[in-house]
Structures are given as C-alpha cells and as structure tokens.
Image 1 (cartoon, rainbow, N blue to C red):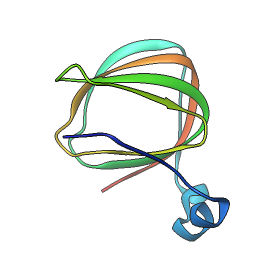
Image 2: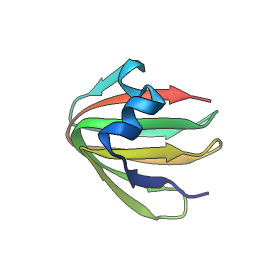
Image 3: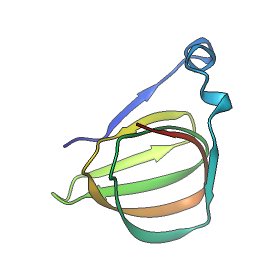
Length: 89
C-alpha cells in the first residue's frame, strides 16, 4: 500500500479542477492518521514526512500531488505548516 507522489503542470491542475477542491491547513505537529477512503491532494504550502505502518518514509512538500490509498495507517510529521487542496474518493 504505497503513497503516490507526483508533480503536475498548471494545465493538469486546471483540467482536474484541483483549485476548486476544499483546502485543509495544519500547523507544525505530529499525529496518527487512517484513510478510510482514498485521498488525492495537492500541496500549496508546507512540508511533511509521512511514515506508513511498514516504516517507509515519504517526504511531501509544496508542489506535490499525492494519492493516499484507502486503508492506509500512517503517522504525519508536519515540518512546515501545511496548506493543501484535497478530495476524497
């Protein structure tokens, strides 16, 4: 169960309508999280390190498009305050 991190062009972001998705913000912190459904998101600001239940670490930062799979258990470490567009399902 891998976290998928990619880069997208402005055109791809516009085509997917990402800038119309809700925005989520989080201060510097650490917390556990479970994804009961797939989440797609685009990081507008910030930097995080996400560690999955197998110990794999993922660095995510401004400009990354990320897909978190349904059923993922992980720990978030917010290094720089985060602002991201997100969409479930």
